[in-house]
Image (cartoon, rainbow, N blue to C red):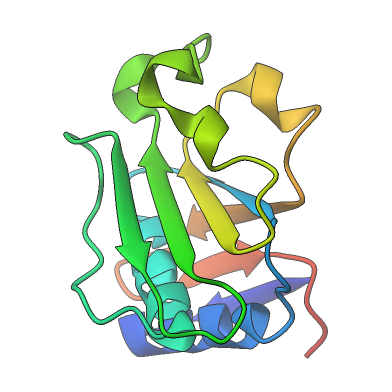
Length: 142
């Protein structure tokens, strides 16, 4: 389903709605152009899961790990593969220790295509319509 948001707050609220359906162990792939709302969406996920730290884009660090106060999801792992390119190898990021854990949500911005086919639970597509409007396609009922 595609949703239109017009403010960062609306984008975050959409993430809060999705967070209520997460159980832990999911890998979310976020695809879209620069500035289309991906990190803002992850900030909303972080808020919904009880992350106390400010959720930043991991463009330069490649991976940020946040503790949550959620009763069953204890970590939000946020990756950005933009600088690594489509064939990036996630081995060097020590992602393996986070995979398949039921107390973790992994969110990958600019996911490598080889990862999309086998590990991703939820794919979310972001499209910038204009300076205010974003279309966000995700598996969520209104």
